[in-house]
Amino acid sequence: MNDDALPRIKGYHAHVYFDAASLEQARALCEEAARRFPLKMGRLHERPVGPHPDWSCQLAFRPELFGELLPWLLQHRGGLNVLVHPITGDELRDHRDWALWLGQSRPLDLSVLDTEPD
Image 1 (cartoon, one colour):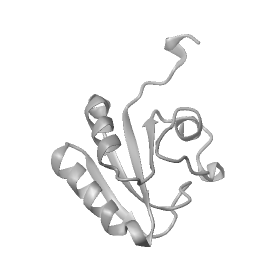
Image 2 (cartoon, rainbow, N blue to C red; image 1 turned 180 degrees about the vertical axis):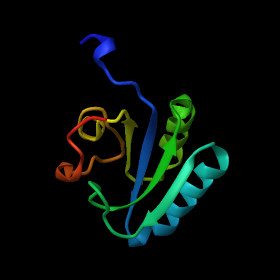
Image 3 (cartoon, rainbow, N blue to C red; image 1 turned 180 degrees about the horizontal axis):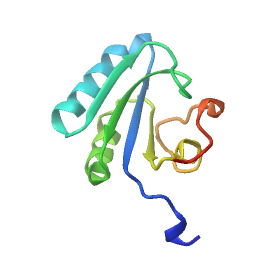
C-alpha cells in the first residue's frame, strides 16, 4: 500500500481495562501516567463504554509520546490489559486494524464505531 493512501496519525488512545478488584490499581497507574507524561487522563468508567467490553480509563496522547509512554506502560501495567490505537479519523480501522494490546486482547463491539472516515 502506498503511504500516501494511509491516513495521518494525529494521536493515540491507551485504554486501561480493569474491574472492581483492580480499580485502585488502574487508578494509580493512570494517575501516575498523567503525572509523568503530558497526556490527558479520562474518567475511570466503572461500566463498559463505547466498543470496550470492560471498565476502562482512557489516556490520550500525542504521537511523539508513543516511544516513551508505551515502554512505561509495558513495565508498569501490572497485569492490566491495555488497548492502544491510533487516532486517524477512521474509528473502525483504528480499533480493528491498527490496534495493539498489552496483555490479553479483549473482544471489542465494533458495531458502535463510526464506519465513515472523517
